[in-house]
Image (cartoon, rainbow, N blue to C red; front, side, top):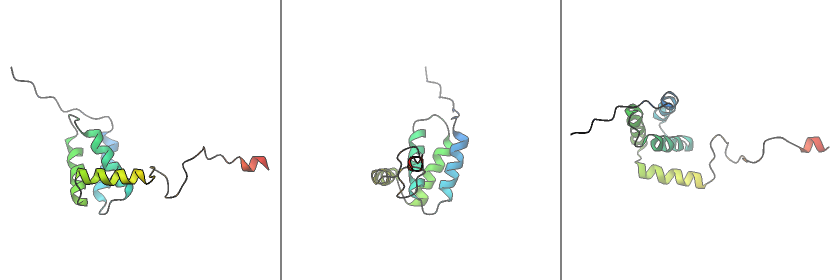
Length: 106
């Protein structure tokens, strides 16, 4: 007896990820953040039975940037190895809570 095809599933983060992917598609030259987002979303949707529109657009973004998955993987590993942390400006320290105790000790 033939197997039934798996129905398309809706991912709970589809709407949020759609916005991110639209930003990726608008980027002629990707920033580190764009590359990291593309890699994480490709990983999130790999093997997911649905979200074909997101998967197709992620692949399209890579083509626009002249990259394949292997090149993206290499570049994002280098980005992370260089100390990239999402949301931090270049050279910013990601240490502590941000509470400055020096003023309280004076």
